[in-house]
Image 1: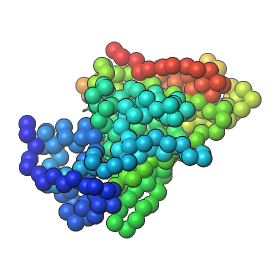
Image 2 (image 1 turned 90 degrees about the vertical axis):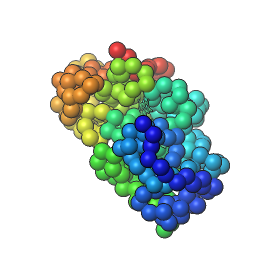
Image 3 (image 1 turned 45 degrees about the vertical axis):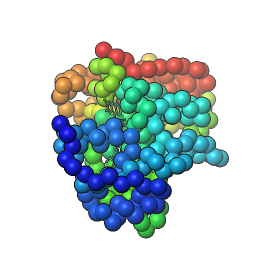
Amino acid sequence: MYPRPFHYHRASSLKEAATLLAELGEEARPLAGGQSLIPLMKLRFANPSHLVDLNFIPGLSYVKQDAGTFRFGPLTRHAEVEHSEIAARIPIIHDCAAGIADVQVRNRGTMAGSLAEADPSGDWAPVLLTLETQVCCLGPKGERPVPLAQFIEDAYTTVLDPDELISEIAVKAPPTNSGGAYLGFKRCAPVYPSAAVAVQLTMEDGLCREARIYLAAVGLTPIRASEAEAALAGRPIDPQTTRAAAEAARATADPQPDMRGSADFKRQLIFTLTQRAVDVAARRACGEHVEVSHIYA
Ligand SMILES: Cc1cc2nc3c(=O)[nH]c(=O)nc-3n(C[C@H](O)[C@H](O)[C@H](O)COP(=O)(O)OP(=O)(O)OC[C@H]3O[C@@H](n4cnc5c(N)ncnc54)[C@H](O)[C@@H]3O)c2cc1C
């Protein structure tokens, strides 16, 4: 299907884009990679009257590290993160970028667009929630940093005002002796995961000092598995604690049955993925180089 007619505006700076959004009102939407917005427009689930294109604004696509912070631009594509040596210093971020859909989607889609979309199955939000992540929001009144945990309010709903843009995503470098892993189960590459688990651990003297675990695609928003975290904190990562964490994560998941599988199947996926992700995260936290990818049916 063709989208409904819309007016196209090409912004030459982020400030101009925010001003345009303010002038054009709630019927206007920014356009980044178009990998969520354009399909929704073609299905006529989204019908903006105006699109403000960010793609011709110079300097918005970057991955940088300054002092203790990793910075991702508002137009940084999944593929740029996947191939970035800087981003690879946080392995869970590389896991995420490399596992999104296929190469065509990764070449266009952006981290910021994914967070702004707040799709319940999106990969970036659960991964970045295991880290200390701030979303910088720019509007006509200026810039405000919002912790990611407060940024997503519900499925497809964020705290962004209609005239606000994500201007940067800032991730605090994890402490030393930390490691993470993001693992999902996918029916095939170019689809969202049926279920996925993001785990970030910090180890000290053979014990897990801190654990952060988020479940993806099994709720309306990423779900923090606090009981699973508690099952690991202060303990060694061994088969017993890992199993206890996986059982707690399974109990926390709140999946809906759909074309990706029954609710029971997704809960079982969460159990298995949590076990594997905890194992990889712990090994990475101890300095081992471990490569992983999603599991494909
Ligand atoms: C076939 C296919 C498979 C996919 N599989 C996966 C998958 O496995 N995992 C996954 O995570 N994603 C998947 N996606 C989605 C993909 O990751 C998108 O790139 C992402 O969700 C949106 O990013 P975008 O840059 O394309 O945003 P757009 O589609 O351009 O925009 C999405 C929304 O964000 C808003 N927006 C964009 N940029 C900004 C900004 N800077 N500030 C404020 N608002 C902004 C737009 O107005 C729009 O509402 C898939 C997409 C397709 C087409």
